[in-house]
Image: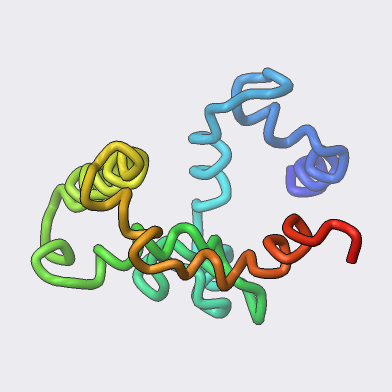
Length: 138
């Protein structure tokens, strides 16, 4: 049976076999249950510090960075009271949706939209572009 499973996996069709035979299936439940049955893969994850209890959801491998945008979510899981909530995923997702909406609405909030004029940090970043547009022949 293992030789047959190895042959199927080497062809790249093991996932489609486990998720009901569809070529581009999106339900990977059976695949994950199949791979998670036993201690081998869990041991590999422990060795690489990839389990949720060791690193949360950013899961970096070796010296390669993890998903950098996930630190925004992962941050909230580390601080009280969120690290003890049973529904922390829902609460933290709600917080991130709130901050995303605030960020999207910055151009429409009168006090916040004036900050770039009052503190012109963007002009330091774009100073080379401003020089070229003011003096296009240099």
